[in-house]
Image (cartoon, rainbow, N blue to C red; front, side, top):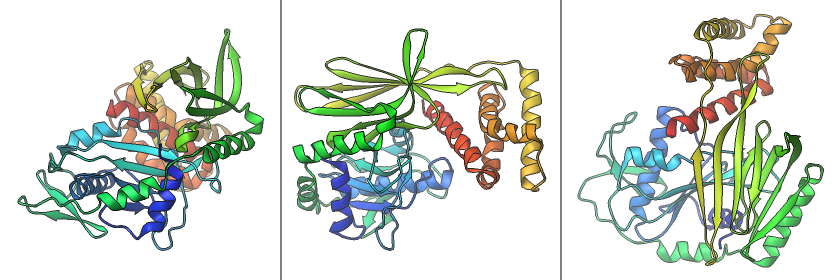
Length: 378
């Protein structure tokens, strides 16, 4: 089993960006340009590595390899995006890797692109300035368009195999990982569970009891063997259950109109542990958008638009308006889920002003766009 934190260190230490790995400071697949560039790199790395894994490391400064970190990104539907836009798509996995020097809310993103049996990967349809049918290959550290008569070479298998071999986990790394997790979460009831005498899952969170059930907020969950953060949230609540073979996380989101917020199930993630030292993760979106009176939502939608205009013009806000700024992302989201098609465009327009107004408002913006991303890809 590969320790993903050690793998990232080995990739960064091995060489500059090349034909089997790329590094980025951040990833933005919420906009067409960012989505198109991400797909281009996936396509190029898949074509350039027909017999070995290739990687994209996200949250690293290019000039000096300093690990800056990015927000936790839990898009389990990223393969849907790959399948929608690429012909002969590779298998792609996105994982969040914690590093000791980073705060709990920041990780390094690791994208693993698995071999595609030598089939040429290409864009299925137009996106941004790239045309459907385009083929990309790595030319050193750059993803470049190529002709249709390309010949795929296997140049990296031995190098990648050596890097992955030096990133294998061991008992010392596992124990250090458990102790580090427990020490960082002393005030949040840290615990661990061993599955199949091999896998170690640690989790921590603030307990809450409601109607005989136990829920957790401020949750952090990690698979220690691979140093992968499985879940992290400052806001949402989750329920956790397990048996001898699996670990299940049911995430809830807090949505509603002012003074009428409720928790709604969003996504259920189950990790199945197998006897052959393998595991698989299955996710199911269980979200049913709450429906509200259209007239009430129309009033809130217009109020949000006027509030954004005040933020743009740096006009002073009343006490109630300051409260409304915090609710603005989630109420825009509710409007969108209830048929207001332009609501999310309005929220995206408000992004820089929310970020400038306060870190709390921007945090709620990111939570709302995260929920939308899950719903759209499903």
